Image (cartoon, helix red, strand yellow):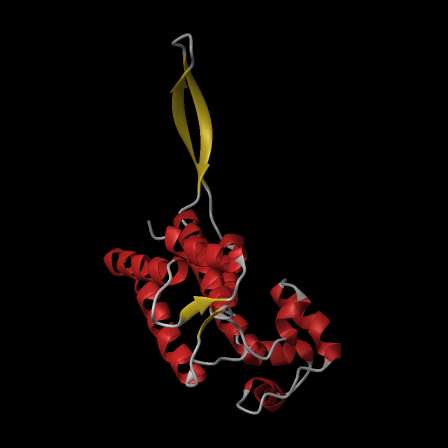
Length: 203
């Protein structure tokens, strides 16, 4: 996944070109490029309130050097919710006495996408939390950890429910049973609950 600078990502997501951002800030395009380029100079604090105003989002986003996957999804949801359109339609319901009532409801065509992004964001946040918690007791700790969790993330993000169920069953065995594989989670019920919570999203 591209390690895109937060300002550049926000610019793309909110459909505000960086050239327009530079103009509104009164800085050159080269200055903007220095902020979002590979070397990534920090955005001067004096420009952050104006950036927050331009995009109408919290200043915190412009103090970051990188974005987590869940944060990218959150920004997408902010943009979609802000630009959602609503359509009114008539619906009916029957009360306990059998009387039919007509009511006006609102429907947003973007609501389904926003709900899906929220679901994806929840899963991504859990993956990010769990990635800090799981480890394998071995001298080759780092490599095994990285390879193992890369596989866990790959299966989870595939949203293949059969594979995820199989992975959940295997991890439940490794987590909750004495076994010879040297796999464990640090002793904290909150951590194992997070893993269970993640897989429950895919039931």
